[in-house]
Image 1 (tube, protein in one colour):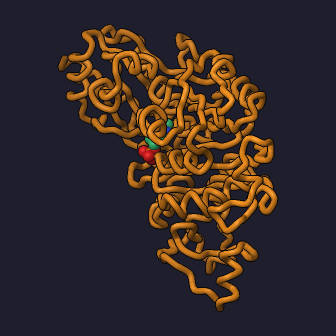
Image 2: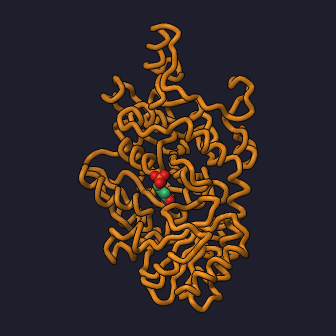
Image 3: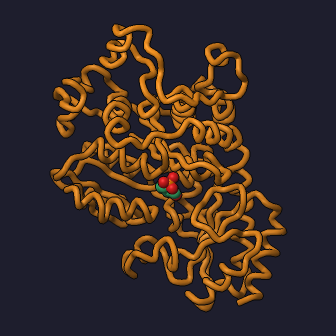
Length: 424
Ligand SMILES: *Cc1c(COP(=O)(O)O)cnc(C)c1O
């Protein structure tokens, strides 16, 4: 399956109709648990002598299809799905790291991720140095003896900075740590971080992959390229107290981390995806290839239109010639630059709030990647808890408005913004 192209994999990968009762649509296996043939069979499943389903907190046949499909479209050897993008990130980091470990991360991150790294993980002894990712050598400069991961977003939310993934992945390789890339905004339809050296790829499936604003979900895709036996990760090369003495790297090889995430991460932290949500997300994934193209076309059109409005102070979209990320966008996002556009309103904080209140088609809410157009003023909402310096490094100014450009007719979207401009 995975030799096939993206659009084909988005529709077919992972779903074998011959074992799923001939159902053309992916069935929802709405079951918490699975009947064992006998106690020996059960014992074999628990000891991994045989692979199979035990309990839906660990895995489920519907979720497994989504996992296989995501691995196919990102070019990984395996994937694990979670109840949300945040569960994917926190469970992955908690499975990989321990107290005393250190992360080097881009300062331009989704607000929730920034908070996890900046406030919550330090409480558990895992610290992060945030760097300006526009200069890849900043990553090497921040590496310490205890550094165990690099974490970035391929296309930062909401700064829309396109990262030079190849150069940062070289720095990660040099430091012998896994390079983790959150690819939520770009999506596998526009960019495959594994091709540029990422070891692990994160998605909030809630956004473009589900795509219709109805289900939370998250995933991590394992490229299978990281050497867990390099001496920095003894949890992979020594008997694990967490799973009756299993030596992950020896027993499982390349997908060692994928298994550890299921056997310990999901077992202990419990952020399992509901099979019903997996089904909804699979429905969305089927049309991601056509949707993300149109989101990108609409966003570029609207960004160019905004650049010519006198009410607008500045526009940021990596597909614009005026964007400082345009050269990197040409290299990493030649097929389109996704559907997020940010711009500043003349008149600052108050004018930005007024505009946001006046739109009728654009819905005021905290999400991105829906088929419907969305609008938010981050300084008063998603990023209000950050101080001004933190807001600045996350790329959030007082006048900034973030649009998630949907699939409505572009003329209607322009007319909606036009009447909202008139209201301020
Ligand atoms: C939304 C988002 C997340 C968090 O995902 P949830 O599904 O909302 O938990 C993580 N990273 C990025 C880039 C996001 O946009």
